[in-house]
Length: 451
Ligand code: GDP
Ligand code: MG
Image (cartoon, rainbow, N blue to C red; front, side, top):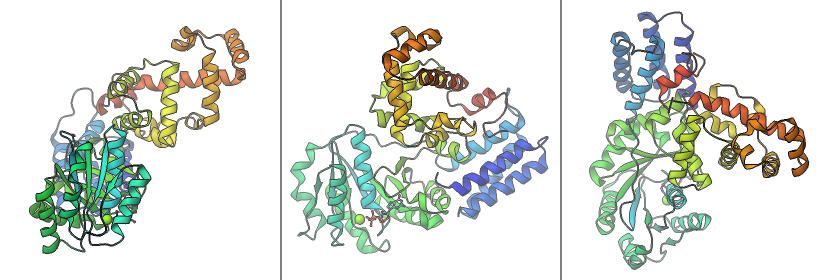
């Protein structure tokens, strides 16, 4: 995951609390020092670190734990809550409110604008929007080719023109085309620094285009210097949000994230790799939850939604049933197939509250393609009643199903075992609905990270 080091130190810190016999001032002071150290190491601004930890400390010392929570759990909740506030509190989504919805990307050289343009195009395409790219980087000769390539890779039309050396002119040439699209993503030119020249160009382009969103693209490797950059761009170009790229490649990402959060410019996406799918919507509660090892069911559902191309309602429904522990064999199969197309199952498991810490049997996470296929065959031989309530399948039926489907009876049994295991785990979510304190209760008052 991104910020792995920070995550490890924060997890260790919380483990320490867990392992202690009782919570006293000395322990809280230790916790505060640990958190400070962890944040400073990921380049978070000193002043910000002290403000944050002071808040945590005061709350930890003064607040009574709410009913049903132990002191330890309450402290973990305080850390979670304050870190979430620190990173912007809640998710700031981009709502496509008109057609064409214009998203303009601005930023310095090499910050990742063109790459992000492709990622955003794919992101909105997956959500069913018709998308086009517009390449207005007139300063770098190779830029137009790059944006063309990006478009080809994801099958999105690209409007650009190598002959013309004025961004507004290029925009105007294709103006009649844009209404064909729901979303128009506009890649612009950068500079080495926020020069007069760049400000002027962005202003001129903004005036002509009137973008619905102006996103500043910042590379995480500049760490806390991101604050100044975000403030400057905000002042001179009126940005509506930030995309922080290269979160995968730097230990300074914590600095960049927190710096942007305090600049007042909402972080909308983070880039976590060079590939076109390596981008996440930025969601502070989920992000901090993962950082602290608490999981992020929302992110999971979001991914499931994309890869299964379900409608929003279906995803919500599946999520709800999943949470309630009311799912049957067909759901399990679909769930697994969805996970399969999302990538490594263990990576996914990390995002589900508790799964990451539960030390699941390895075979449960390693469902191979071949196995899924066999299960599908076997399931074809189940009756509808059996699919809905696999517990009624007895030894006799297992043999018959095996014969009928050409799958070995061992494999049918394995499928049933997998179902029961998953059902058991899912039951643990019942009622917790992502609420951390409730969820912690599910572990018999123990925290998911073994507290
Ligand atoms: P631009 O000059 O702002 O358009 O930047 P580019 O989009 O051309 O990106 C500059 C370099 O950063 C390229 O090599 C990209 O592959 C790389 N890059 C962009 N975003 C990310 C990211 O999220 N993670 C990593 N590791 N590399 C990225
Ligand atoms: Mg570029």
